[in-house]
Every structure is written in structure tokens, then in C-alpha cells.
Length: 395
Image (cartoon, rainbow, N blue to C red; front, top):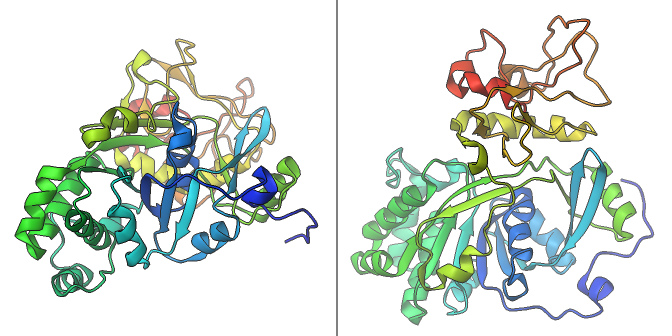
């Protein structure tokens, strides 16, 4: 990394003081997607100044260490065909290690805490396909024993349950749990998992969760590739501040909550609104496999500047046709701007996306280069799972 003389990013350097608002959202799974998505929506809500986030890492402590050194601040870089735009985000006021269960209990015991959001990835829930806790998982069994004995659990849902138990003991009232991972019907799935884990630990706690904890389903989307040293240099050039942990993302973002969010439903819903509407063009959620493959391609696609905007044959800019959405209109693959893919290739297949390789395909002399995004070529094994109309979605 290039040695810099720019001042370190901090609240005192940016705002002149270090005062913050007490957190009302607790987040499990502090990573780039959370900072580009839920944190962004929270900060830009109509009453965003009243809502701040205390976050916990999902695995290693690095994100917590870097953000703590910067008072929770980070640079969000929106990368588009028109260039990069930076915004210094201040909505995260605490960045904690995942194993700081004592602080998690303290936060969830506060009546001011209204929401718990999660981006921990599907495997970290440790659930069976029907949503019940996986009792063949040694970590789940160890957590059940730990919770019964009053010790700190190790898994994400175990720690969440410990926090909910502390809230019950404190009499802090209702709360909403909002999973934001790419899982169909994620609210009911996590509800079943948390209640099942609670029943294995304490039947009275399980009854309290049924009465006082609501689980909100979400459909979310925003590309967030891994941060590179070049991105850190871009953040410094745009803000004049040295940022250890900037996040690069696309200009579009989608978030749709569904379900009850407890006694603060009206205000909480304002923190998770939609920035692009798919309803205007009859779009529907595509198969989860497309979402997972899209994530594996994110680094390659966002690193190529400028990158294309998805288009619909209807010419609608509000179509919302994106990675995980299938437009029902006849649609057109977007053309890619400079730099173009290698001359011998014009598309990438769904399968080759996993390997970050280009697949050779003859190009028509009269046709401009086209970028596949998640489009599958004839014969690809994943093509039927994504659906034929994925060919038109481009992004």
C-alpha cells in the first residue's frame, strides 16, 4: 500500500467532535454488504439522524478493529458509468468483536434498541431446510449446553438468543429481528430457528419470544466487491482522508421488508425502504442460485469501469431489472463500455463466472460486444435453474 500523509478518518477530523447518538439497531455480521446496504438505508431514512447502529463482526475481528480506530466512520464509494462518488458514513457508532457477548446482552437489554439485523450468510444460521436448529451440528449442541449453563454461546443464533434472554430479564419489551441474507422467506426461517433453539434451552424463554419478538422477511440487493488497495487510494483521493476500510458498491440498491416489526413498526420501516422499484415492470425474485453466483462475479464486474446499466425492451428505467430479478418483458443485453472483454470473447457463462474466466464465443461483426453478467449460454447446466428470461437481465 502507498504511504499516505492524509489525516486518518475520524469523527473529530470530519465533524469536529466525537458525539454520537445511542444505537437503536444492533447488527450481527459487520461486513461490506451491511455497510453498503442496511447502514446506507438507515443513514438516508427520513429520520435517519435518530437511528444509529452498534455492529458485531461475523467471523474475524479485523472489521471491528479498523472501524473502531475510525470511530465507526468509513467511506462508501458508489461506482458507476459516470465515475466514482464518495460519501463518508457515520451511522455505525460501535464496531464490536463477534465474541463480545456481554456487550450484545447490554445492548439488547436496552429499551431503546428496536431492531436486530443480520447478514451472517446462510450457513452461519446452522439450520435444517425446514428452519429448525441442526442438532447434528456440534456447535449447535455446544451452544444449547452453554445457554443452559449460563455460559456464552459461540454461534450467531446462540448469541442472539443469549441477547434476547437478557432483554426478557430486563423487561425491555418488544423487538424485531430482521435477517438480510439471501435466503427465501428468511424471516419465517429464522423465526423457526430461534424459537426451536429457545425451546431446547428454556420453554419460558421460547414463549416470551413468541409473544414479544417479531421476525421480518427481507429482499435485498447491492453489489459489494472486496475492497482493494486501489479502492483505499480512491477513497483518499475523493475525501482527503485516509480510510482503512472503505466499501465500493453500485449506485442501485433494493430493500423490501415484509412482516411485523413490533411496536416501532412505522419508524423502523422507514430505515429499510426501496431505492429502485421492480413492481412497475412485473419483476419477480429469481432462483437463489443466481444470487450466489452473482456474488462470486461481483469483483470482476465492478472492477471494469465503466460498467453497463441493465435495460429492458420497454425502455423503462424503473424496471428494477437486476441480478436477482427477472424482467418479464422481452429484454436486451446491455453493451459494455471500455475496457472491453478480450477480442475472442463476448460473453461470460454462469459456470465460468465461478472461475472468473472468460468463455470464448464467436462474435458477430455487426454486433457490439455484450457482457453476460449472470446470463447463461446454451448448454450451461445452471441455465434451466435461473430461467430462460435471465438471458435478458444482463445484471
